[in-house]
Figure (cartoon, helix red, strand yellow):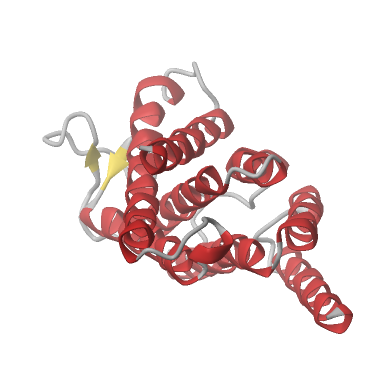
Length: 234
């Protein structure tokens, strides 16, 4: 068991260094990701950790290869401390205080939004305003959405929802199939809701400099997490 834990930690450290080497994360983002990941693995277990790790791996993959296809466009920069905190604070806090549904919902939203942003920018069609679908906006604009981006958000949500289904026993008591399916559907919807919230806040408030990108990410993941928690409590 000790060897397994050590192997996981070493692998996670190696992956974090890879993120730093590829300039997907800066030094501060790498350190905080390491600390969050090791804490969650040590105190919540492998299943909770693998959900977070899935977000990091898939998010990095989409970011790195998406930017290579776009010829390293400057629309998105290396993810920094603020980005990691804004996307991961809700998940970390919910793990600390043992709120599994908020944890799953927030990570579902974080991955969905990351995939939507990075893959959506590859769309050959101009994105449109989420509040005014008849209005085309520039690629990468806050509040801009595309069919490809929305599809990518759905895939991201589905990935975390699948983790919830597979590892359900670590996040909830009881093994009734209907409750298990309810959790899966809620986590999927949480990711979609978080992505939509992010786009709306981006257009309404971030574009007017009333919110930062970090605060938009934080609120979006929080709303997604609370949605999953509240529905599961009914």
